[in-house]
Image (cartoon, rainbow, N blue to C red; front, side, top):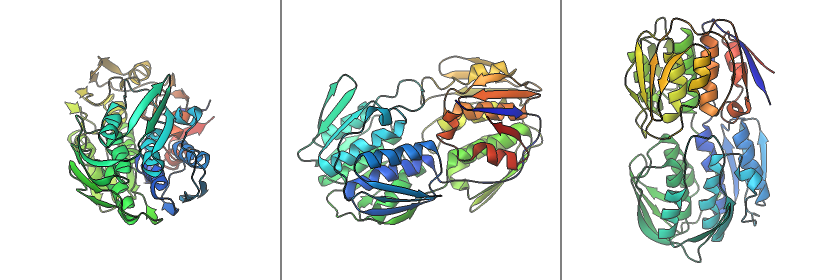
Length: 415
């Protein structure tokens, strides 16, 4: 079990290079199964979730090699249709191999996916769409077996614009006879990136960036070379860190168009933010509370940015109110922030944050990926020394996290 040792109280100043998007590269890697072929994916972050995805591909019979930010995959020889439980438990995105395996082989066997504990995260929307396409499934304790002799075109109306369900249904639809229309589809940039990759492979998909997607099944797919988008959640985390420490950061390789909801909140709080095509410059001398901050599907305020921004607002002037509408257990970082001196009252869906003048160091345990990042941000702005354990959560989604912060003046060491 790893830990960060942090001495806070220094403003962050410098430049940070934003890596490729975790939530983009994972569905892209799953998608390589569908057509079979050789793929070169650029801008892959060196994080443990990507390592898990590559291990899954190898178990399925593929070859997968990494050279820095470049990953080369050959899925031509894939033949296994079952993902071991120990790999499924490592990350939530493992569920995306369900749609990919159904499209390639007409059958898939998986167990419940793991990842961060954020409340109930059922896969019923995934299964709803797959059943409409003609797939049958059965549960045997923790094992899910899906089969489809033929996948057919249909219309799927999602009750909620689930990102994972939208991605899974896109992948399965590639093998359908006829056309699949997904209504109320998620519109996150990572969905558009997956579609961009699939189009480069020969897929016929219309409706990018809208809530209605149309996929023409049966198109011949082939290998390709593709670069994934920058990670907007990594960028949002560094924006929050700059605000919390009253610092100045340059985020290189970021796409400001993907971060408007976060940028708007921080600007309302007093941050000065300059936006260029692939760069964001943030400066914060004084931070004011902002209310309400309500999480929502894209292009609303992202649930993944809620915890890091809450850490920043812990020392803002005034009272901020957060409303979490996506997950039922996404305030698990609140006790750690309280241990550092934050004044936060939280219910299941709401958190009221009364800004304090200064946080203080404490020993806390990371609960999940973004909650752990919030604890790091709070520790960077606090007086004294903090110790944050279970850093494997952050390693799932942030490449070279401590190193990047250290290059901007933070006193942080990995233990």
